[in-house]
Length: 501
Image: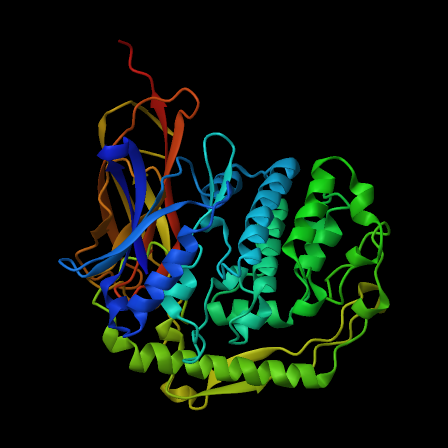
């Protein structure tokens, strides 16, 4: 929905970040008023952990809306987590607590001024060179979608970090931000978000229905004092979460200050009634309410809401809204995440599968209903694309050593492993890290049929040598012409060599 550029403001001798919202958003007759109102509110936020907005305006010559913001020199948390995953290790617990505390402090400040983020995720958290954690993109979700953002059945946020109520088509409130922050904290401590699946709707249904995967199974070293903070933030019901993110920040601060007895004391931190896949450690009290099965009425409401959401999304993104999107929209900053168009059909029905087998009592796991979306007429079902690819070869290899300020050509050979072609206008879009003087995006220029290969060529330039960051990474996302993301981002890594003299 937007592209971000680095600019230089000569009058103040400083670099700035310029976020340009895509022109088609202006087709909404109320967009300009909403943009000015929300941007003005965001510009009034003054907090060390929130990116500062300097200015916002409409350029009548180019017919674009833009915001000028503080330029933060550093990677996003998403880039760092990808690097840790690549190296097969986890972020240090003290760093995870510090980052979560900083984001919670930023949210507490914004919530006190009636500002809700609605899209907390690692890609919107920047870690600057001084160690400061900065939260970006406040107000963007509301600016783009408006106050009636769920009227068309679309969802606001990113499925992997979305609260259950947002997945059910509700706009959510400040407690939705708390849930998303809980997902980010979970990911930092375990290496992955709690839920993953092949499609966005499947991830959303897991947030609504599935028990929380046991954090101790994924990371046995997690402090028993930190565990209840995670579970409380990730409660399915907003009423069972922290009601004030400031309280969560204080609990994190207690652990950060090596005073965990503050966190473990008293009823406010008792675990909410959310199921987990494994029993909690003995040091964490588990109220009986966590072990009781939910009433069938809740599941009926959940399945009905999921059905309404799926049909609404189909209508919104395959019918009414499809004519308003340009042929290609490079995706840099997604707030609105529709279902993949290839997974929808002319008519959808919600089917409830038979009950799962009985679970032993010691696992404390209530029975769950599994919802699946399937067409009424399977004979007319198009292939499920599940767009993906594999890297067959790349030159130079990741980690290659290059001298500073040197031109290089990065070539990557990928194979289309999905059941649908990558169309002519599919592009590789710069997403994160060092752009290395590369283009914002490049077009494949050919249709890549399933099972066939394509060679992607990028002309880059290495940056100046930095002794504190000699290894750099550059992430690029393959994006179809309709904005559908293809697979995981391609991340290139180089080691920069100092040039004598």
